[in-house]
Image 1 (tube, rainbow, N blue to C red):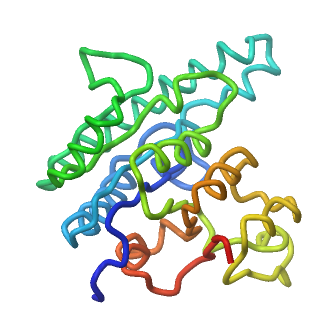
Image 2: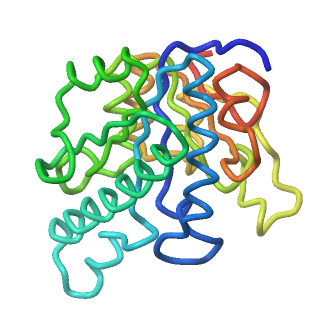
Length: 239
């Protein structure tokens, strides 16, 4: 395997990655599969931060259509990300990794609060830092949280792990002729309205020149390939 091309990355994992296809809740086999890949990347010499979503339990936007306020739904979603973070932490440590969970909403009994310098120090010591509870504010997605944390800790790239092998011009599950992009600029994504990440996340990465790599998390070894600079998925950058 080639040497890593990045010193520090943030991996964004959706909550759906923690369960079976079309499922809900936690599936420890799926979490272990992700954990083993993350640990391999960390052991290759890359400093790894992980931002986790909570969609396998609930989505605040969906709750807001059923009588729960948008802000309350988003706070509930933040709690869901903490559940996933704790599960990933336990799995990683069972595999022999060293981790820390840092949350944007203080939960001293379970995790450390997110403090930028503390997160960087953990990364420098070779620990996998799992970042939970989004930004700590309602109305912001975990994609935005991943972009924000990437800028705060000085990540070289944001690895957007998905269920598909890159960015397409239309849904490949619906359109068998959908075209996959090997490379896009930030402005391409914004101008075309491609549903990669929300516009706030894309803009944050564009302003701070953080590369985004969109790839299939479910394919064995892809995280290690991503940090090694191999040609997988879709790369989004300045040019």
